[in-house]
Amino acid sequence: MSSRTLAIALFVSLLIPRTALTQTFSASGHFASSRWSQFEGSDNGFGGRFSWLPSSLVGIDADLTWYPSDFERDVLPFSQQRFEGLFGVTVGPRFNRVRPFAKASAGFLKVSPTGGAFACIAIFPPPLACQLAGGDTLPAFEIGGGVEADAGSRYFLRADIADRILKYPGPTLTPEFEVKEEGFLGHALRLTVGAGVRF
Image 1 (tube, rainbow, N blue to C red):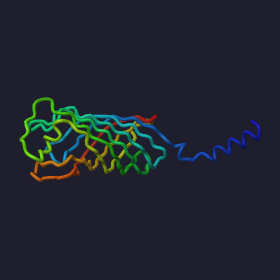
Image 2 (image 1 turned 45 degrees about the vertical axis):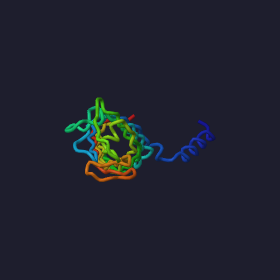
Image 3 (image 1 turned 90 degrees about the vertical axis):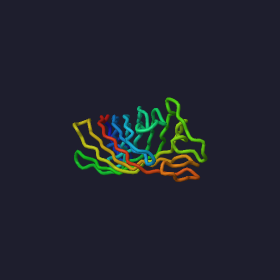
Image 4 (image 1 turned 180 degrees about the vertical axis):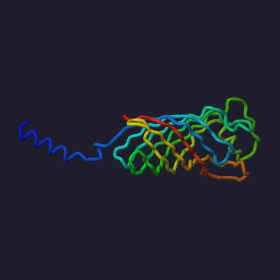
């Protein structure tokens, strides 16, 4: 190798950020259990996540989850299934085989219509379940954290816990018989547990 080629290779290697050399991609599957601030019970589903870590400290997530069952279950269900997409950032250092992180994301929760007849009382504003029974797409946000632990050279386990924030439509009558003239935010817990592979 000539000295000119060696000098060019050295110069180019100095221009490339070191964090770019440590970037990784990963794909994982997860079980999700989410609460609704305005309704009782857990909404359970499963999904997948694709992540890109441009450095060992920062990650970019795309998280898709499908909730296949009726909701609510203890009363007449207003939705046959739900589909959720959340896109955000994780920040946290790696300590040997473990990476704790904080996270923030935004996206949507698509609420499918109820599978059968859904009777609603003729009042204004309508109850929230009646608003959602025809299908709707709610803005969704998430703030929380989690931990990722290596389970081999390429495999890992991951658990996330977060405050899921949904923006409900208005005007509406909440299950607590409170009238909301405009759209409003509801806070509830969301938990995901899964495993994945890096490549």
